[in-house]
Amino acid sequence: ALEDAVSGQDYASLARCTQYAHFTPEFIVRAIWAGLQRLGWRGGRLLEPGIGTDLFPALMPSELRDKVYVTGVELDPVTAR
Image (cartoon, rainbow, N blue to C red; front, side, top):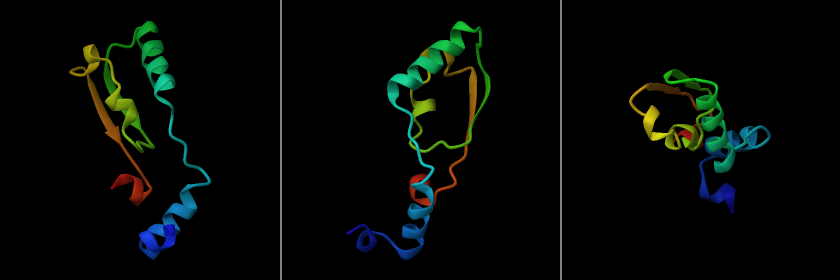
């Protein structure tokens, strides 16, 4: 059914990325943000090399929103869309 739902190129991309794809659960993302704040990080540049569903920027604590510049990269075109 999946092959019928996407183009051949998208299907090939999905086949490649499923071996390595991982989406971090929300509770872990929140714990990472809390840990960064406890370590004294108060903003700056943030590289998200596999931005996927955009969960890390989406769950950024409100007090950091104006202090963080996020650069996100997603290699899988299906996820990027």
